[in-house]
Length: 134
Image (cartoon, rainbow, N blue to C red):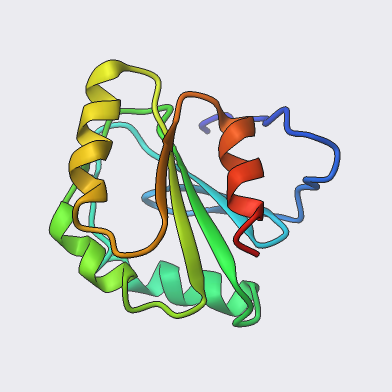
């Protein structure tokens, strides 16, 4: 069994739920959702729409923020952001990168996202930024 990440976030961010899914792990700090996709998968928001619906159910339709903590290498279809753009309760997307290449890939993704989209090298900065949209 894969070990679940432990995040060292400021005290105002309390872990309220963990979802272990086939594509990765979802950590709920209130309505800030940190996603850690598994190594080597092809992440597709269209294909994994059921996960988005599940997040909306857990957050009770209230505003929420998606933070992708890219601790693993995986693929994503930038064109799939058109589906996330249509989720009204999703207020912003943050991406935490650990390499220059990852940062450059995120810059490309940002061009397809119509919601606030920010890139970070630090998870703490990402969640603090995300909370400003709630």
